[in-house]
Length: 325
Length: 147
Image 1 (tube, rainbow over the protein chains, first blue to last red):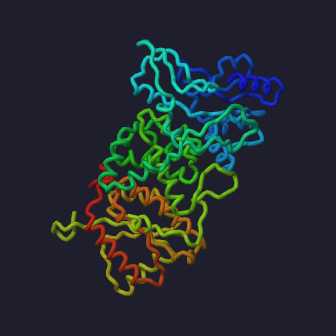
Image 2: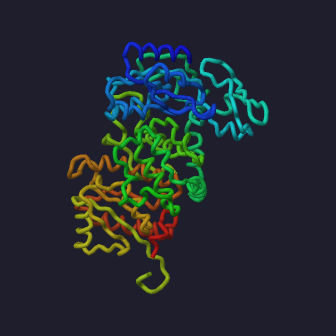
Image 3: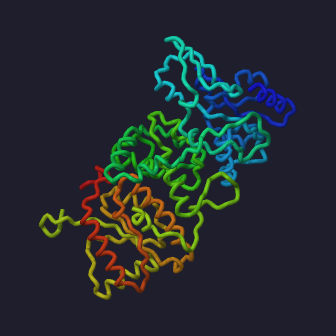
């Protein structure tokens, strides 16, 4: 992390960049938050460790409107989102200086808490430079520990790889944490259920939704200036869901709006305060697009056309959904 | 409330028909005196591509038991390529509805040209039969819209 901070200081000093977008230490040792840094003194609070899961690419939409260049720290999977935003002309590559930061999998505090580790006062082993495989916690109930690999975010178990898609320079080593896992296995499992079971499964998950809109606000693909959910003429507008239809409606519409543009960065599931596995919707669309229209990874490049704004003369007919069984 | 007075289930079916082919196909079915159930309510749209996935969801919300979308045959779109986009969109939407547990038979896309009155009435008869066997749609309806 020191190498990263030193390099940022250099770039700030020689006026290559006006400001830095990174993470600063939060109130607790496990909740760093996205922040701007403008001076060397402010960098005192800069932090980059295993808890820095936030994808900073969406912040670049606003940062691109500011005067001068902005330095942004992106993890390998964040660069897919950034590429997708370039493709949609939402960010300005010219006004961005990207430092690709290394990543060895990000931690999920909910999973740590689920292991019975609560009242955490300090953490060690989450540093980005270390090779520690165990996390050591100081808690108000004494010392506790758990394995790093057991408490990663869901998306890290299906890591897209350690390559940065777009960057100016790379600092730090990355690691592919997927170990060959199939990211569609859960989707396939649900597909094979009967309609009754599927319905019951999603009813159970979606009825937890409190419509806080966190999934929408964090999503790099949800970057419309005016969102359909902010319109008061719309059924699923800014309000709590009042029945099961609205619960489903919100999530189907949101998933459809990002279909073909979602890079599967997993931020929606990470921020959901109710722990709804929202990635299951996005992955279903990704899986279908791959099956019907050929392999497509959003954000891999900035040239290709998105599947839903494209067609071929011999696309499959919608009846295929029934035939597939 | 069933019109015929007995308890026979009469589904509500919404058919989105494109102005240039399917709507004219429905017209031909009518002028050729081909019968299809009155349960089908046709909504005319300028092109099948005009059908926003929201329309389908809204139809279910308001109590439709089945939704069918009809458009020109691929390649015959009045606007050249509209139905190709619609085809991709509907494939993904139907797949998603199937995924969350709405029976796959409740949604359908059929390409009907202006000369295919026979096909139109046959399709509608078949679709209504299918929805009758599936019964009332309760998975995607808004309780406040129930009459």
